[in-house]
Length: 438
Image 1 (cartoon, rainbow, N blue to C red):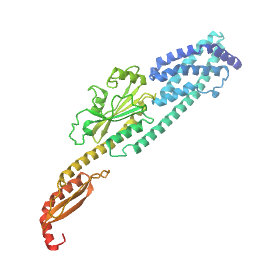
Image 2 (cartoon, rainbow, N blue to C red; image 1 turned 120 degrees about the vertical axis):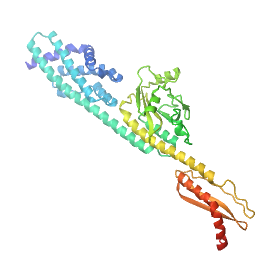
Image 3 (cartoon, one colour; image 1 turned 120 degrees about the horizontal axis):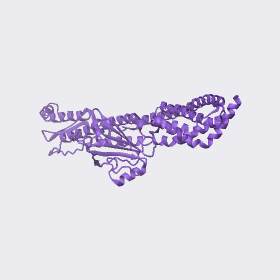
């Protein structure tokens, strides 16, 4: 009887082989009815008919030539769907639920066709039992291969993301320059993470005097980089000031400090993204599908906004939010350090120039000239100072000093010492008369 059942299964497979596309359509309809989430991703949904047809063909091959399912292989389309699930960050459990529902649906379709080929219910019963056994073996083995492909892709993505994090930690914040730090962020993140990265800083952050209003939402584009020449995705140019509409997502991100992921479906294009009809056509032609907005936030202050855009890279930014936030957080600290350094150095330079002598002392017996060049390195403004103090007998005292340290504190200390110079002049005169050394 085993030979009769095997022969009947082979006959059933040959009978159904011309109907593979019809069976795939019926099976997909059932899958979408029970598990509609399987069609959430457009590119996966587009591959589902091919994957389903390949599964049916592979199963019919088993029935006709290899009743032992241990020799079965997962179809190529099934492996690709597993990789796509991994790239989208979709749990593999969702994929395996689809396998179970699809397996039961296929068995039901095969059982419904069996009575068309024979009226021997004993053969039909035995064939059904064999179908169940072969079907479960096929699902177990093919799903194992798909899960292996899923995990391999996930491991590859994790390695790539770890490498990106490592590069970001080494290459972002190499200088105490706000603009250069923003440029480093765009350079690192357009290598294999996003297709366009823009960095906007609030005008108050860029105001070296520190008098700008932190409530003002005017931003300035300080850096942007695209995988395409000329950065066609953006109409803004470096250094250009702009504002977003009050009800737009960028303003919401700045106000709440929370990131926002925006998916663009079909021809939809938010007004704050496409500022004109022609710009919208350019963006649609490029195929922009994902925008991730992440606030630049450091030490309790919102500094600006970073946008990550994908169009050439097909995978959306769903599973990359935490990575993007980590990279932006690192960059925000570096940008804040740079702007604090710039503000302090500007203040120290102003103080230093105010306190240094504006005019040289005119003496009948000596001519003096001076030049002061503040440090241009990362060490910052120091506490160097000098003075020319007139003495009796057509003589002068040349005083040069150096306050230990750098920055505003050193400059302020220098100012106090410089101011104290006027109190030192009588003492110098007395010292001159007693030692004759000056």
